[in-house]
Length: 204
Image (cartoon, rainbow, N blue to C red; front, side):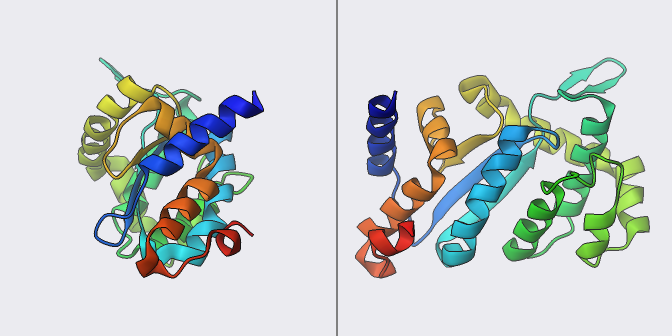
């Protein structure tokens, strides 16, 4: 098993590189997912160290299905509500650091939005009344946008969280990066002399 993981990790690290100085990460997730929780807390420290080389975009949709009478989410009604809160908040944050700070907050137990709390909204300095209005009304447009963005990635990768790296939508790459995101990022940065990043230092 370890040999297989090492082999797939080697393939992924060889595949990922900086494009115009950055690595683009699209991360698809859903509010109650334990794997998403684990990924966010593994990814956050490496983001803090090398944020200048990372372009991160979250797609809070996961395995949500659209039915005739509304949305059906993997972890029930609370999951649907929390994902909608996430979408509304992300649409109001203007910089990547704020986006990361917010998502780390929401994926820290007890998972505030999933638990019915707007505490992370308050932490980001947003007005609850504005976010609540979005959740109740204008969030429909955000639902459709995220649904469209997640559709192909979920068809191809079929796992939450999924990762699309530099536009490459592959199940093997997504899974390897999910399990070894630090190694994948560090390898890509170390391969590019312009970053000045040393692999050993990055992996510490």
